[in-house]
Length: 292
Ligand code: NAP
Image (cartoon, rainbow, N blue to C red):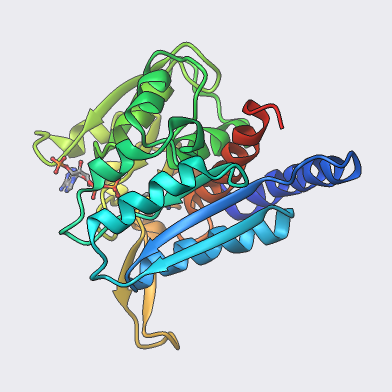
């Protein structure tokens, strides 16, 4: 078994991005600027946003973090989105999801200027992705495709099962891996909570991608010998042996599945760092697209 080491792969992407930024600095060009809107104090969201800001620092991007209390109104967030859309110094921005229940996530996502939507969640970017037209690819699926590419995983003609059909991971990923590209050209089966015979379907797959949010759901008896396994899940579970009192668990039972598969991405250190690397790629592109 070999590790699909997202941390190492993301580091080499960040190195390339840093070189691009250093060159821009030398040429007196604008430095990419990413803004992040964070609502509330959910531990997971804070960790993700902090990691995004840290990645900007490492690469040499400018970053701005805008924070609000849980009680902030939808109108305030909407007005912030409008002002970020109009702010020429900001090349791309994200509104970290999930938002509190009283704020309509779809409404906020749709209000983001698609040219600054570096998370790739706007319907226009998702539509462009489906049609294979230029636009911003959703960060997590794009990161997974890049992880497969940079680790020379052959996807052509392979049976791929994606578990989970969310708008931000499973559904776009199933489209990206099914289209006529490299990586791509897989025969994709998109599964979900209503899928019958999930174990039987997954156990025939050459490539399994688990994006469910249920710790250790995928066990060795579901996996074909030599399959490639990508674990997207990140759930905090209690762990008294850790100083913080919790550990991050993936959707795959790593200890047993790793003995059977050819490649596996760990949690943490797999898809998470690749998602952030994709966001950084999108931010640089956002600025390039504006011709700055
Ligand atoms: P989500 O919106 O929570 O949806 C979960 C999906 O899993 C749904 O499609 C659901 O089916 C399916 N599902 C639930 N139980 C199932 C079961 N028993 N059998 C088969 N399918 C089942 O998903 P998400 O936002 O994509 O998140 C999934 C996981 O990935 C979470 O742990 C999240 O934290 C993690 N994540 C990680 C990153 C990263 O960068 N590392 C990024 C995004 C998400 P139904 O549609 O039928 O309900």
